[in-house]
Length: 288
Image (tube, rainbow, N blue to C red; front, side, top):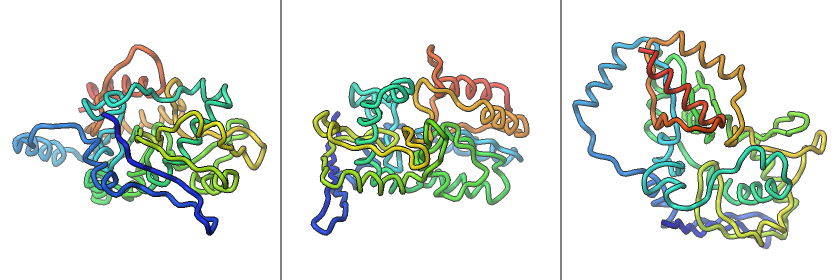
């Protein structure tokens, strides 16, 4: 299935950048990316309620499935995930670091997709977990997602295991920049550039043609002139060991583990996200 959203970013006559999203697509986008599921089983709801009520220090780990109802597609869901809809695959860390054209392609697509991606809002699941924290039930929240929806919902006892798209890092000096400020630099450098994207992908990505990408200008670090990268763990990269150790300590402190929106799949190759899935499976078997 091809999603054609008519997402267009243009420069208006007043010098302002405007993002147009076809209204019907915007209205149904959340539904498009929610995988089919059977009706809620009341017995399972009661079982979950009992599990939570008997636990005093719950650690919750969330994956991409918690954000699909906010309109953000995931990768692997049957029929609606990126892998099911297209033959596209996520960017690899080593390609981004080594290749300026790869970075140019990534940032052009991200520039177009950012206004919509950054506008996504938490859904009831995010708000429920935030409320658990306020009630003292949730000991810690670990998310594999990079969409900042838990932060928008007010969660504070939070570790973003794979980083966050709302931050940008310099690969040379480590300078951190809010993604919104970088968007303004993109606009200034590309005042005559416009593009229309057809199709949405996870992590703020959209689909553009090579012709559109080639004329896109990418800013460098203001501090040192180095290349910029979103503060996220790309496929093939690894999670910071200190962050992993921190999460392990939170797990040991907890008396229960609840996994929301993650398949816990294990893959044969050692990317950071795949290693996280292996660790998650181990936690799910050992923390009771």
